[in-house]
Image 1 (cartoon, helix red, strand yellow):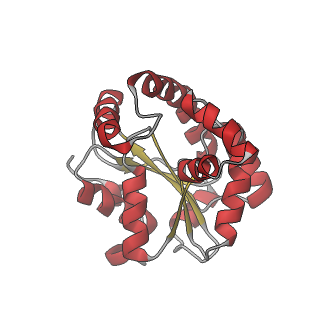
Image 2 (cartoon, rainbow, N blue to C red; image 1 turned 30 degrees about the vertical axis):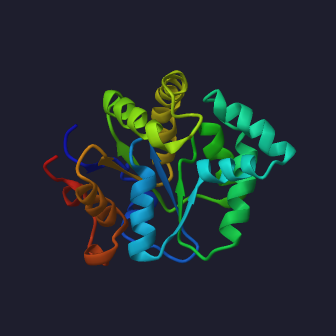
Image 3 (cartoon, rainbow, N blue to C red; image 1 turned 180 degrees about the horizontal axis):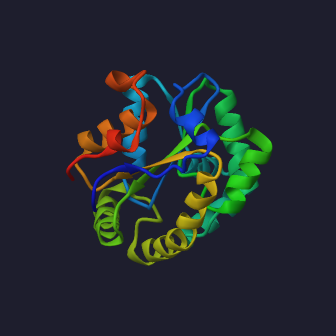
Length: 223
């Protein structure tokens, strides 16, 4: 992995997004492969800056744990490493976002162009997106290690392979779609946790980076 850079296109909307501070109603998409550390980084951003954090995966797993009919259907898809229908996830996100003032970090969504288009149709365009980039061998090692203690049904080798295949097939088209309407900040997720966190703060202009003009140079660091 190389340096962390902003990959948002210089459209008018991207410039406005990149140069404006987060506001109460804003949503930030947080993307990356399974095991890329996006959940860890969201938890840090939430703890240190008071931003609401909603994991699409956790919301789905909570619905499964509720024992509802919808939860049973969701559970079957998750166990096979398949994508849950977008409307199901969006309905859960709507409920969660209504329960907490923003800005909101939306972790692990959208996972397809259809996801993104449906979200935009119902909830509008997100402020920006963070993409935590980690190569597949590193993701593989991380997930297998996590599976030793997590108890998650999707942390086994067969399902991991399916999740990787789904992610590889859909992630780049999703990023290209998002870049048309917002800034997308690519961050080297293979670096140390605190270095990755600093890059995320810079991208969102939080903490010591608040109010500073963001540019590609702001996101560079030695991995």
